[in-house]
Amino acid sequence: MNNNDIMRRYKYALNLSGNDVLKAYHLAGWDVDHAWVDACLKKEGDDGFYECSDGDLGAFLDGVLYLRRGRRDGTVDSPGELTLSNNLILKKIRVALSLQDADIVDILDLSGFKVTRSGLNAIFRKPGHPNFKECGDQLLRKFLNGLTEKFRK
Image (cartoon, rainbow, N blue to C red):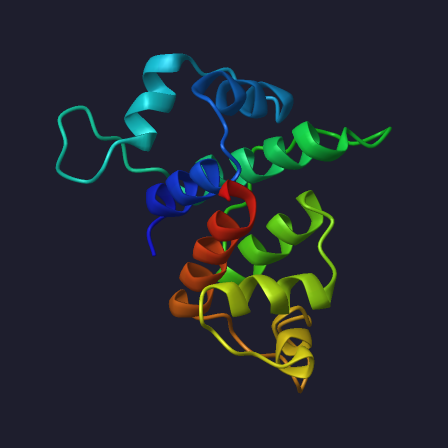
């Protein structure tokens, strides 16, 4: 999945307005405007499309976390993640929405994707761990679809 698609799906699932997205970026320490946000939310091939980098998406995910849960005391704004993996994206969404393993299994079940809790735990392990499993595009896509089912109904 590309970063713009992830941003669009996450924004839609949480029913965030353009102002909410702008506020999320500002909370993450990014100075962006409505035109830039609109360009990020356009589909590839549309006029004015801007391809989001990993840093752009990382700042959005961090901003949504601050929007939903507040900012921790003593946190310093980072320029965004240099490389985002699907595992890290899923982890950031999990933290922002305060989801437990059972919640994620239920969300994936809403989209017709079956996963066990042990399989899910492997996705949240550190990359060097022997039981680490990489999160594929299909799982992330199904998770975002499940979020839409859960929050938009």
